[in-house]
Image (cartoon, rainbow over all chains, first blue to last red):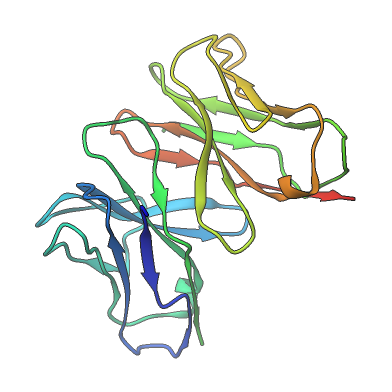
Amino acid sequence: EAQVTQNPRYLITVTGKKLTVTCSQNMNHEYMSWYRQDPGLGLRQIYYSMNVEVTDKGDVPEGYKVSRKEKRNFPLILESPSPNQTSLYFCATQLQGAHTGELFFGEGSRLTVL
Amino acid sequence: GDSVTQMEGPVTLSEEAFLTINCTYTATGYPSLFWYVQYPGEGLQLLLKATKADDKGSNKGFEATYRKETTSFHLEKGSVQVSDSAVYFCALSRRDYKLSFGAGTTVTVRA
């Protein structure tokens, strides 16, 4: 079954405590990306990766890091979380070159930073 | 930059009612347009899409027509069910192949 798996699904943490949200996909997709969803703002892209070792900033990258060491994994790193990073985060993948707009999303990770 | 604007919710309907969610876009060139749906506790999934003017996307009883003259892509369903309760997002593909999403419209269908 085609899957995009995120962990953890829920997390409460405190300001400044580094955390990582993992994302793994089994569809062999080259393109992976991270979004945050906030009320009234829809989804905004944080970072994306076109392939292994290739990453680039999205629309709201401040305060986040990513890495793409393997094709299937694309972790999102918050080095020093702050309360304004409280949000619902989604990992998404797309077959590279398809440009069909069909993204495959994980189930989301709800992060609360106190 | 390229963007979409969709009607704010929440929208509450009775079963078998007609649903319309308005979406208008601003873009240079000719973007592809999409509707994504997010059911409670799940990630988004593609509902339908249209890639050029006058195209009609359809799926699960939902339809949307790409109207270049009015820069719109309104989502419609003739008879909603409780299982259609979800958040609906309009989106367009930008020239850099990224997607720009609208703010989302929460729809609740009551039995």
